[in-house]
Length: 178
Image (cartoon, rainbow, N blue to C red; front, side, top):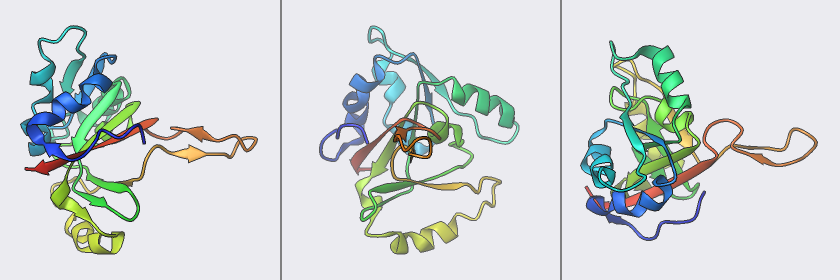
């Protein structure tokens, strides 16, 4: 994890809370889910000097297609979307690919920022089992990912490397009201 952003905040404050991490960036991919839209991240940064360019992820059928979102996602400096649940005892977040959020938001950019309502934090993975069963992929998007931070490996010469697969940095922004 990168440095903590502080305690839970109102969704209206989320854009300001992550602005310092976004300002050095050039391209940011935004999920189209309701929480990400309500946080108005692109609007907050619109008139700020040196603000990144924001792009919307299109995961809808008939959208840019698998090849298009992979190429676009890999060219982004950050991806911002929302989590469907947090797992308290693991310090992890569950994200779900849907018609509003392609997997490129969470997997392909160097920085992944997850907006997570405090009310969606569950004590353990066992408590999340019913939620995971409900994500059945009826709309063609069945990928559920549990993210506990940047990937790590020490396979090569026993040297620890972070961010080998997926983002090198991961930030969770807790939203206290939705």
